[in-house]
Image (cartoon, rainbow, N blue to C red; front, side, top):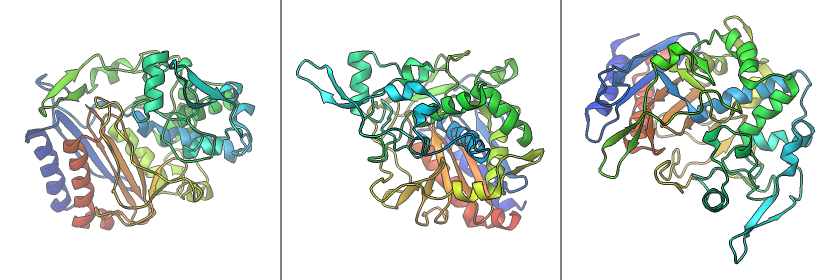
Length: 399
């Protein structure tokens, strides 16, 4: 690797950990289809804690878990064990109990009715089933505040039993769909989701530093989540962790990982579904899974920050058309960073971001641990990193 990419990326990392406002610490990596071409770390695991952020630091990767669960679903599909268009209740009967929330009556009681059609696994993969998140949806927030609907971060079965926000298939809304996909995988495989992933995804990719429950080694390298305050300062939240032994392996947000491990997963998608220790997906599955699966009436929209401590209003590339695949955001138009139309990517709640550019043969991941989501310093730094990757041309040459 030449020095252009390294010095540009190192500079961006240094800037975000020393500026005002700042992030506590950051890890960023860029990979070609075969190996990492940049690895960087700056700052601290916890602000003022004296432990340097290192490339093997472990992060709560939140919604960047989703694509891994999606991969497990696609494997079931390849083996003929799953019909994407069969009612999802075929595999998990509980999902058939969910009703549509039409609003609240004068006394504040939820008004519920049966859905007009069944939820399918395809809808779940595309976020069109009618499920949301309380930090992005006012009706769910009201259900949480007034009717005790548990948060998904409890990793409980009860947190999955939310009403639907609209009839399945009516539109796109980002939510707990992929948690249900994980339940479908468990039903088909007869094993917990983490065990399925370990056997069928992590082993062939050589991924070890990733799990729903932290090992002692992972816990010793864990970065702390921080809250961005109104004045721009950061407050460490050491107790903000997912349950150590979760009731449900939440396929939508439950994994912890070091970023080098996630790069191995990105390389799977840059390639044709082959890992260093065996095939994970068929080439034709990969090709199909990165394409828009939404219908004309289903559009990817901005995520509104309904709980300001958890998320700002957040959107990738405002004004550009985006769609959804199995299970990534697709930018349908070229992005200002240099990302071409048809590339895929997504993010995690504590300001982790990744993208995968199959056309040019590289991708990257940016990891911080800050709430709320869409933090201007972290998100801005990530976009600068992506822009620098295209500007130097070295990643393209390495690919």
